[in-house]
Amino acid sequence: MELFSTGQVSAKLGIPHYTLTYLLSVGKLQDVEARLAGKRVWTKEEVDNARPIVKAHVSTKYSKACVAAARKNKIDWSK
Image (cartoon, rainbow, N blue to C red; front, top):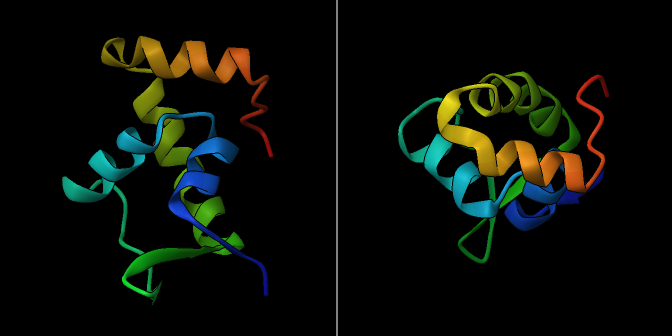
């Protein structure tokens, strides 16, 4: 089973890590089940479940920086 850090997940989703942390803190994303040394550890399934929620957040007017980051990193939302 492949595991990812929050930084790796934010890079995969094309958003800054603080946006992912914000979505977790306000309850828009369900927190991950596993932690290793006090840090979140994401599974591929959890990343896939987060993708549509992040996509919806990025499409709001408050997320222009996220859209720019996704374009810069050539993120394909359909994956």
